[in-house]
Length: 201
Image (spheres, rainbow, N blue to C red):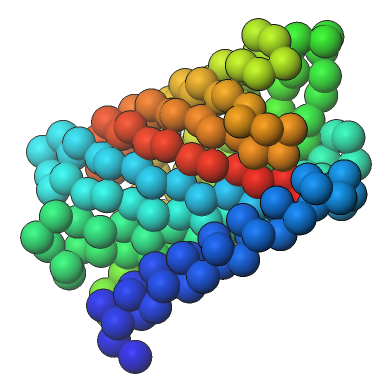
């Protein structure tokens, strides 16, 4: 399977999983039987600084293991506008440590590692993301984070820092819609605006 065909497969898989998860989340909400799992989808458009603009499509699946620990796996496909050779796919796993400061404030620390697949090559990387979240009320919340990432083999020149701010709104007790603005600086630079849905079940 070529890289482009593989990318199409991932997108079709994302749609299938979304439909299945939506049905599962609806059922779980009806039965009031949340099991501590979560699933998210995300779309983002990137305004490259000195490069090629791109769109990204992402999925994440995880579990709230305890009140202070989440485990997750995620994938993301980048589609550069008119430049198929520059597309890439990532597969990442990580742990998120959470600490509640008060009823409104909480902090987190995400530790992850993954593989980045590009046409004819792939490499492994690590990521560390501290974050801060403020719960405005039962529906609204805002958050900010800084993601530090680099390849284990630094010759791949993937070192970057990404600053993010997000706004979330609970559509139901099990479904959250959010919008996120990110600024990435390092070996590649872009500004990005994205939207995501997270389902708890």
